[in-house]
Image (cartoon, rainbow, N blue to C red; front, side, top):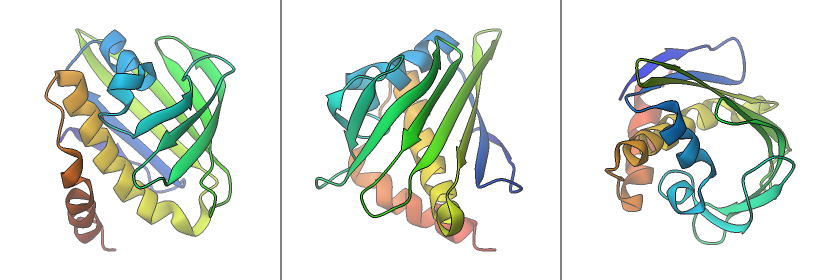
Amino acid sequence: MPLIHIDESVDVSLMWRIEVPRARVWQCLTDADLLSQWLGELVSGAVGAGSDFEVDHGDGYCCRSTVIACAAPSRLDFTWHFPDEPASKVAIELDESSGITDLRLTHSALGDLAKSYRNGWCVHLSYLEAAGLGTPLPPSMFWRLHGTMAQLNMR
């Protein structure tokens, strides 16, 4: 898992290195079939400039989002709203060097949920990396990996 940095001075800020070109990571962020391999099933809308979309994270637990900024293939910002949580914002920046992509994810306005989201995003980014490499991880492993992250991040 190429997690290369966690900034704990903000809600969630992670830097992840994925050994594929930025265009492939962008495809994983925006293509419905690839999105389902790392985040959840796109049940409505599309991930693109000015669009609204809804992702089912399993068992009908859906997050609604609106794309705030979209600069392909380097930046994607969107709102994040589950029915039982306050609205928040996700910002993803992609930089490429020699065919390797550094992804910076910042999730803000989380309050008390930040620690849980940090663990969740580490797992989602593990799944994103696998999707980018063409070796998707089984969805059934998500909560086991989340539990491992929670144990590792107990502080």
